Image (tube, rainbow, N blue to C red):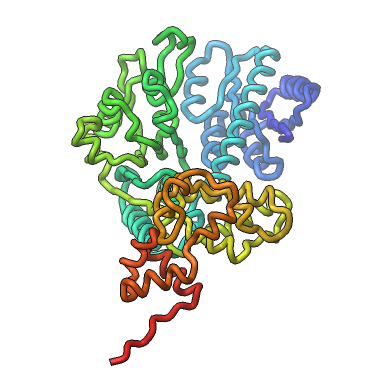
Length: 475
């Protein structure tokens, strides 16, 4: 940051004194004597801060601030006003001024204000950078896959966004995202936000299972100074931080009943009360929640409020498990291998045929997260450009579906971590086993897949990969 300051002051002696003081402290300071001149300089010198007197020939300083706010809202403006002229200072702040100084100016106060103004600018630029980076990695392109299940999910999201785009206000409906751990529920939430009407406002997320219940209320709603032992100062909560944007509540099924009641009030009244405060504060926040729990069963058991369940589930989205996504498994595997390969300086990594067969056959109990993390290790430890079965560190003891294949290792043996991934690959569904199952079921794919312990999509993939063709029947 160049730290450029435009000083607008018709008293030439005062203007030069301020300029010299600022330049000695490393700022680039330019002076002019009227608001009209300041507006002309705005686009040529592009200042970071404008320090202006109110009493100027022609346009007043307050009028200048209004015009600057309209044309350059990120610009920080500081008003200089005569001693005792507090009305002008208040009007300047209402017009959008960052702060004000009273004359005669104390240079020590000017120094503090400049440091504060540039500190705020730096923070805003950092927040803008991270928000833009989040937006770049949060759209539809992150929802990789062309399986029927994923295409249906993308279509549903598209229809939601299209309907929201026709709304005259931004009071968007609440969304619940359901799915197993590791399926990518957060990516869906981010796509809804960054492709929607609130894309330019905050996206704030919190994992409800990661914070102890006794601390969660203060984290969400904030607290006043002295509200409890460690509350040494007032703190704004995540709900207020998300004002105008989206609050993503991950693992919402982990909320206790007391917090569920407070969340219900937030949803119904669009207001909150900080811990230790008697004042209600209105907020404009869109709630997206996610869970891997069976909330319907929790409602039946009395562990989740029925009214909150239906309030959170105005729109519901189901993210499919990886084992139900067919050929998406290999598509994602190649994507992650390329991603991690470039990260570790191995841009040309590829799978061996046996490795691809194992990846396509495995049931992925940890879903996309397991696949991504496993392939980071594979990319890191790969001795050459070809990633073989030996580099695939799977968790067969968790893959109960995978363990039920015909002719597979018995369940007790398969439930233990095998010493070699090659053993897992050799214990998989070979061509003879697949063909045997198909013949025993008269080529009924559903029954054959159930016998083999794999999904129908996975079996179809194997039939195509192995070049199996149903023999013609002879009458």
